[in-house]
Image 1: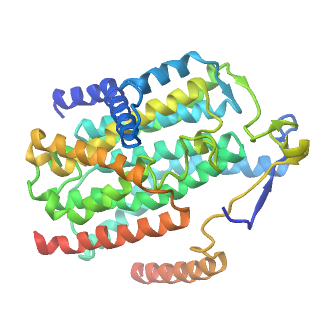
Image 2 (image 1 turned 90 degrees about the vertical axis):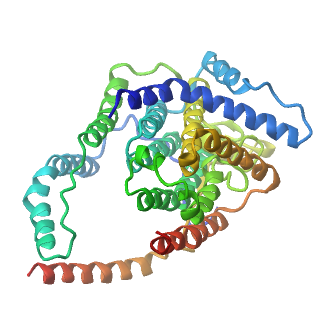
Image 3 (image 1 turned 135 degrees about the vertical axis):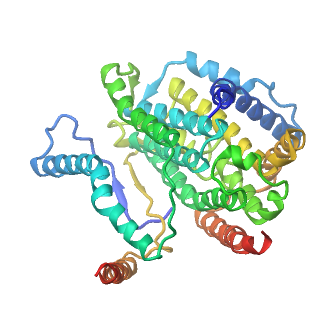
Amino acid sequence: MGKLVAMPRRPQPVDIPLARDEAIALVALTGITYVACALFPLADWAFVQPYTDALAAAHLLPMTADQVSGETVALMTLMLAVLFLMPLWFWLRPPHFAVVSGYLSGANVDGSASYRGAMGATREVDSRGYYLTGFLQENVLMQRGLWGAMILLTLLLWSAS
Amino acid sequence: MSAQSWMFALAFVIFGPVLGALLAGVDRRLTARMQSRRGPPLLQPVYDVLKLLEKDTLVVTDLQTLYLWGFLLFMVISGAIFFHGGDLLLSLFALTVSGILLCLAAYATNSPYSNIGSSRELLLMMAYEPMLILTALGFFLVAGSFRVTDILAGSPWQVLQLFGIFLGFLFILTIKLRKSPFDLSASHHGHQELVKGITTDFSGHDLALVEIAHWYENTILLGWLYLFFAPFGWMWALPLALVLFFAEVLVDNTHARLTWMTTLKITWWVTGTLGVTNLLLLPLMN
């Protein structure tokens, strides 16, 4: 399972108010995501479509009259509605199930944070599992990603000019 | 789209889990026979779920139930789009979202065995998703459309034109059905190193949702398999799809579990060798 990163369990800060810096980051991220999604049709109309039209006019893209069908738009809307309405439904009508601590292969001592294992010893739970280190080395990925992004941006700006 | 196609979608919503449960029942019977056991009744999966619905549900967090409902709903949407004759890519998208919601449900429990299971499930998704996308792309290149209705009316030779992709799909079907040697994320036997993996902290009503979603998934995967043979007509296509579907039981019972690293390497190798090569050779065959 890999032993590079340990994630010791800590009690979840459910009773402690959210720290100000975390709140700023989370609220900003949520707000920007909402705005980006809402403005996507505008960005498409103002930037993406003129760009693809210009590429098509320069015969770099095939000229097509393809349009997303109404049925596909309806189904995407349905899926988005499910994603948005489901949490609302749970918020209005929360399920009333008994809340227990997670399974730890032993007698839980402090919620899901520790358990009594062999010989009655109390052991803190930590799980290690950092996959893909053999596939993706972060420093190599970072270097190549930066170079790749720089080359692509240069090509994009050059072709736009 | 015609009223008939909407009827197919509705039929999937109602009868999809029934067919899926029967497939699971036959699977268990075949497995038992291969192990010289009598096996449970055909409807045992249904009895299991009815029993789960009667049991008390224990949750680590209420959030897991929310995600599991999402897992089930997106599975239903994926199948409804498929059986409605709609866009294969859109159906695949819903299927992927469904899988991710299952992982989120297990991650939400913040419990070690569930976390291991969901990490492995995400790795398996990384392994099989490219082949699934290539399968949809292959159908598009042969039938000229991503729509299931157009693929159904395609050339009878499509299974030969897409033979590499077909073999690749059979390979990843083993992963999608969570069969050995790729049953890394969940275990039917609680004594293994990952306990029950992704479903360790689900019980009662929540576990029933997972089982019902898996029944839907069985039907959807059988549908994907059927697509390869569909132009032959259902008299040929359905038995062929069923035989290949249950061939997975033989694979399950004759192979030991692989490690995640080997699974990822082999699956990507199969995707590249069979899937990509088939796509490259397709223009020569048309």
